[in-house]
Length: 397
Image 1 (cartoon, rainbow, N blue to C red):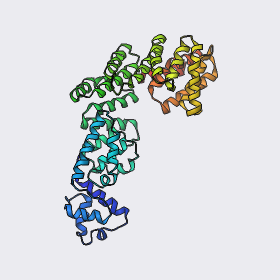
Image 2: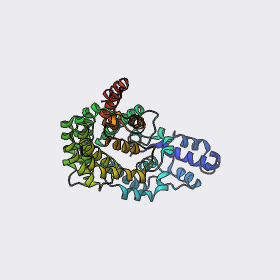
Image 3: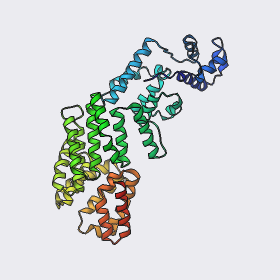
Image 4: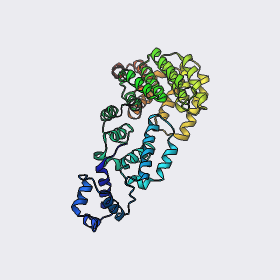
């Protein structure tokens, strides 16, 4: 995406140190050690011929500004385009991988490392040492693609916001909105509507426009605002129909169904959840969980049996007793029992579930259970806990 002149020197220095060679040894017969030092520190624009000789001495493939360099630079630029528009970049990535060695030792190295990170490779250790060599746009993509590590979620939010101000695309702001979902900052998502929609329309980016409406729908769903949830989700569905991203509609039906459960509109919940289940061939743990809960709370426990069975099978094949799925399954089984809220064992399970959600999940999971948790505390005369829990819920809404 951008040339950073000091980078080529940093690469040279890193390769020299890894090979265990001194500056004097590497530059002998090519240049004076002081000139090599300036190259490594990025204080001089190196002569191309000298640089090629230095690279050759370190057995590094140097492509300079050759036709190969120009071609690879174009491919990298197009990869970023495909990423922004959520296009399939597997073929392009495979083509770039053929030149891994050349890219890693060129001024395209940082962009190449970012691309490798986006495609699932662990590049944190290498990239973290190159932060000072990154151009602003490179640092922004490094941050927004979650390739950095943060001690606190608030630091991550600040990094994403900083990246958005540099990239200024619907893709980057949607990434930020996804993070706002995790931090329960729903109003910030609503406030970004005009900016993101305008950017997506200006870019002609249908996928990012649909993504924003889906995220905004989820933000409204998290606080049970049914009408606005449906408005945004239906916009997303209409945009996604007959596209290569149509499978996203399945997730939207799931989210609508889960929201209707919290609104105690079980028939509407089941209508949407069963659409999602059909598309997933009954394989989704979360969809099976929500269908089971909807049937149980609608007084149709017998119809919940098949979905509880699917959940149990999933746990046996993919999970364990220390997982959130295991606790969610057992909580659903308890809800089949009469007067389950009076059971001390159920209370113990609920408190394990709360701790696990707080550790591994996010607020949306906790909000889904908020009513049954509060009612159980009250049923067992633990009024202080009920009050404290409701305060937690209201604070995060």
